[in-house]
Length: 289
Image (cartoon, rainbow, N blue to C red; front, side):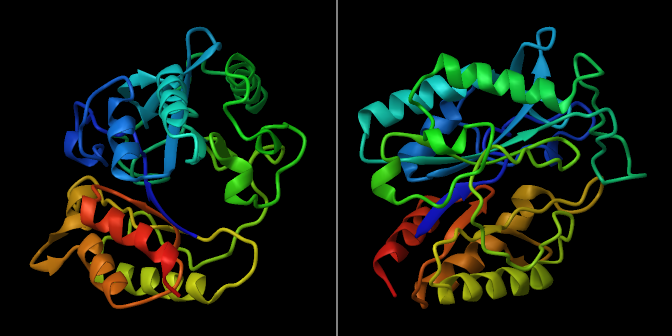
């Protein structure tokens, strides 16, 4: 399939030290109103980043140390309302834990403009799993059940199996831990695209190679491409990589131009600042090739 998605779906607010580096998406409102705007525009794959709060009992939506004026309940309540209104649709969610005490924007040894510590500071993988499981119990039937068993990942379902549900694609911790009892187990390996490589030509060559690989694949797997990049503290922002800088065309326009002249499915494409035309063009690839 061809599925438009967003990277760091709820990242609409910047931090005090470098606000321009934290906003990955156009701001359509707090409390998951931005999520609803994206879903209404056709986005069907979302990237939710959570931090443990409230004495180790709940998830807040964060981008590194920056609270995004929303909580995980906001996400689930509004996704549930969307799916109730559109029962033939499904939403694919990647869930990632933010803040482990070592997180820095710029990687190990980088400038600590994004440093954050868990509340509580000794939160564990077991805590994240326990808190998430409490949410799935509180919202029965919202998630596609085989992806949230806690004991094994699921095979790639058909669209008919998941209509009206959130499909958990992956659940990872802040240091890249993969919680293997959750999500989907069938994924297509595609070229690694570094999040902090902001050279537009280099980045596009990797994206194009991934698109070609996914379009040629006929197996029951899901291929995912991430367009997102930023290079703090003085390089390009998410918006600039998406929309262009330094006289060079941005990744979003390059993708739109490519898809306008090519056929075949695209898999999931996670984007920053996607326009309506780009989202629509990805969706249209479900009927080409």
